[in-house]
Amino acid sequence: MPRAPWRVYPAVSMPQHLVRFGRWTVRVAPEKTRAAYTGLVAASERCGCNICRNYQAARDQVFGAEPRAFLNQLGIDLMREVEVLHTHRIARGRHAYQGWFHLFGALESGKDAYVPRGPDAFAVELEPCGEALSFGFTTRLALVSNAWVNAQVIQLEFAAIVPWVLDIDEPS
Ligand SMILES: [Zn+2]
Image (cartoon, rainbow, N blue to C red):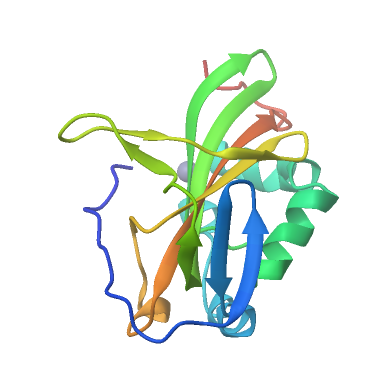
């Protein structure tokens, strides 16, 4: 699915809870974020294609203790991603996925995960968390649902190495 145009929200009231990860420090409102997630349906659930079904089936293996603890600190429900995409096959049985989550908060310091590379191009620069995942914060938002309006929101991008666990042919 192509990405929606970027939306950048203005600064309003600043949440007070600080979280540090990699090169970033973010101000977050984890309880408010947790409440917002209860009303969301995961992209992989809405879609239901084999790539999404594989992601759902493998998710428990991919999100180990370290990324789980990190997402929990932010108030993000890892079972309800905003978007998840298959980028490529790394090797037989190993696939690269990427996706993102939204959260209430603001980027306090650290270079945005979306680094400009020319007029319309960006490189996504993430930092590792556990064996199979990398994360990065950005103020460039895509596919923002109504759960997030009228507040300061940032986006947590992720890249994942996902085993192919479905008993059907994997994508090439
Ligand atoms: Zn799908």
